[in-house]
Image (cartoon, rainbow, N blue to C red; front, top):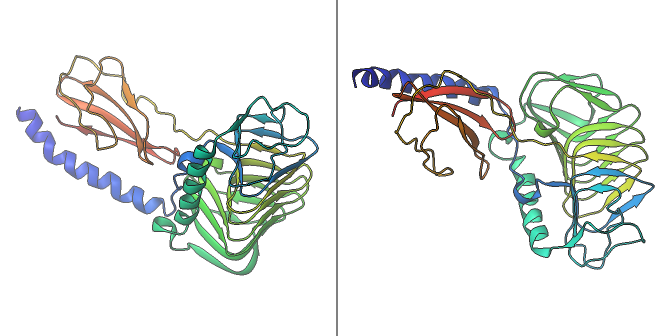
Length: 321
């Protein structure tokens, strides 16, 4: 018991030391896409496709009443959702599902995520560029970058680990050999108040949330998501790959030894669970929360690792039961 009392005060101090620097280090945060997270493409009117595209992830059209989804299941590694069951052409449509309920939820969550790119930690711009800003040749650390419009005509370098939010008050246009070096597609966000256009054979990384439309010219590629709230998504022999953004948990301490009967009570997003020894138990994130990994150590304390669901950082602390 004396050991537990001695550890209690340092525990509180260590948690304060850990949490404060992390909040300052990550000025921008990734929004929770909710039901829209599984989609590589969402549109509000039509999804047209010229040539043959390769899409990894689900495709959805909402509301799109009387409109059609042109890509077929041959082009989509995922499920095609539409409200009315409309499609164009005689290609493979075996993965097509009519699901108005899911699409409605996905569009609502997309709208919330779109708004959250300008709220909370994302409300203050790290840098504000006047007029249209071509990002070519720049090296940017995590933060919130704002402009009347964004362009990219060459290489943009992202340095460090964290979240990048690019907020355009109008358009996003890429051209030439546009590409991004560094960064993780799960942590790069493009909020476009009008429409986004990806030029011929250019390559972009990140999640595009456009209020109106998204157009991808011949051969353009996107590692991320093309999510248009109100307008069309237009494709022409493109590759869109939705990244898997769940953090990978690692064992912070392999010294787990004896059984510990104490129950670790997580926050309201998790159930109370007795740690398993010597195996580590885990709890996946929920409602934009964090992933947890825990195990008893020495019978008197619980070793816990916490990571957020975008993999931006990870740390460990010891909780005294």
